[in-house]
Image 1 (cartoon, rainbow, N blue to C red):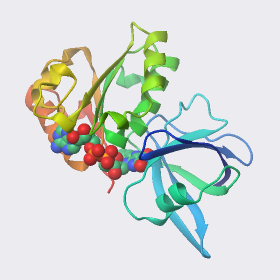
Image 2 (image 1 turned 90 degrees about the vertical axis):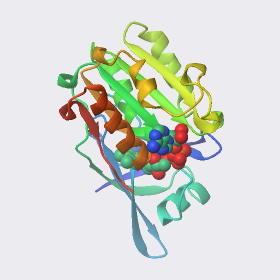
Image 3 (image 1 turned 90 degrees about the horizontal axis):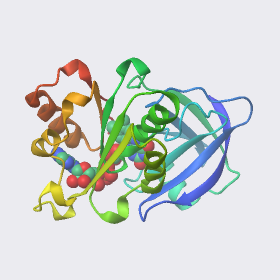
Image 4 (image 1 turned 180 degrees about the horizontal axis):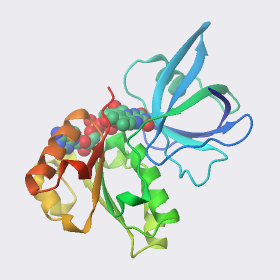
Length: 231
Ligand SMILES: Cc1cc2nc3c(=O)[nH]c(=O)nc-3n(C[C@H](O)[C@H](O)[C@H](O)COP(=O)(O)OP(=O)(O)OC[C@H]3O[C@@H](n4cnc5c(N)ncnc54)[C@H](O)[C@@H]3O)c2cc1C
């Protein structure tokens, strides 16, 4: 476990806070797509919860996280209710669902806060490789578009290689062409999937299982599809 200081706490959306962690000494080495176990001392007990790293591993003097205010686990409650800049926490890096440049051109399917590990992969591909990536983000309401500005800025910087598509599912009776509705098999078929060598998915468990099934039905091989399920 590494000791680190909390800084740059921001309310990114009505439900989600982001913040950075600066290690007490040295750098934090991680791969795109990895997460940390974040440990904090609450009432004399060490409490632990896992969150994906949202920053680019190429910049490892600090790491960034984003945490949605869901559930009642004590670490998420601490982050949303009492964490302040300067707090000291501990962390350990983990996770095997990672991107490396042999995975080449990649489609990133994100459901809600599940964008967290995928934005790290997106930044890494843009800034560190010559490959292409499309991030397709589905959110329940327009207020929940996390990292929209960061993604748009990167797409402007690498217009030949980075692409962004969004959908808002609160009006899911509407057609996906209009920017509304859930990601479905039809929506995936409109993406020219043959351009992508791999697909990474992250979001609610049903989002992952339904969409990976659709990808197989469309003709992708299981070995091309990458995800990790948590809670
Ligand atoms: C690997 C991994 C990493 C994670 N990292 C973090 C983290 O860093 N921070 C954090 O706070 N939580 C994290 N989580 C937790 C987890 O992503 C969320 O608790 C869970 O995804 C619910 O997210 P949400 O409330 O944003 O989803 P919702 O808002 O309920 O849904 C998100 C979108 O998915 C759509 N959707 C849902 N089901 C389907 C379906 N079957 N088909 C098509 N679309 C569907 C919805 O319509 C909506 O548009 C992680 C989970 C995993 C598996």
